[in-house]
Length: 99
Image (cartoon, rainbow, N blue to C red):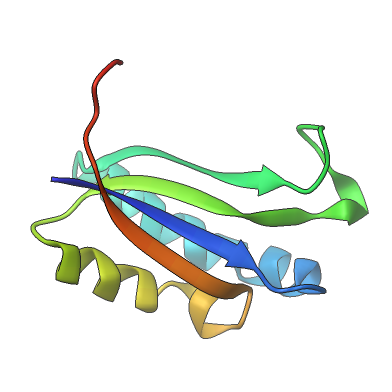
């Protein structure tokens, strides 16, 4: 089943986000290579594809996992969680309806 993983950025963590981004993206690429990633991306803090110093408010990942517990464990081990970029995470079941 798919799960929506939502991470909300802590204030003032843009520098940390950028520093650990390669490790975060590598995990997403692994999901993609396994055919389990539906979509992933950051949420800019302003209405711009490149928010510059305004940074991001969080990220959304939709990926396939065997269970809610497995999705929650995956997000707990994300570099953005381990390094304090995400102040809060939410994991919810997601049903894809339209491509």
